Image (cartoon, rainbow, N blue to C red; front, side):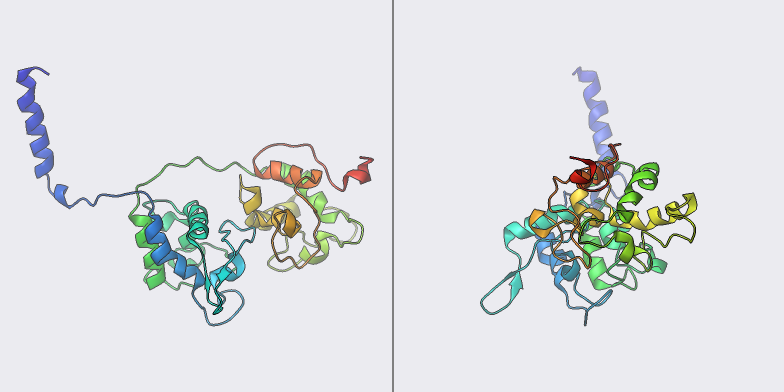
Length: 284
């Protein structure tokens, strides 16, 4: 560097250092595992005073369920105290980290799901709402953890194709496997009604009805993540990676089922061949 430019560089550095607030800028860091384990993870175990939406501990529904927040199953001591090992917590941390936007608590899904809508929360959360405002100490604890991290750009998730849902995925809801009831038998009404009752005189949903089914079904799908999508894990056998509880039958004995593979491809944003029913039904 030439001697005539050194004073200019030195002056620039001095001006930056003397700028108002320059010494007050808080250095940031990646999401902290230690902070997560010490302050955030206990929130998932907190007693809410009962059972059911909005009253049960988060872990009740999220322990190895096919949800975006898929937590590890709890371990138990001889005194019947429950806990997660450090390895378990690291796996939980990886899952929880995908559900926050580092540096942006208000834009973080983990913080919005259990927050009431008037306070900026998500419109729907199966487990109910725990936080009445952002002033809640638990919400603030999670917000502080997220705010302390450097912003990170993440690729946008794949788009779920509505046309494929309308023409193919909905056919799964109507298909009957031997010894089981159809999905539509239990899911034609209520908050989980992604296969609404078909009006008399028709045997399939029209465009508007399909849009309604799609709006509900997508609540149970995590684009790009088949094993975090309850639409795929609830009816999957537990020993094949499915959820430990499903009120209906287990439609798929393994992830090798062609129908399951088709749905997984759709969740990943692909355009697979439509395969509905068991392989032997189609002569396979």
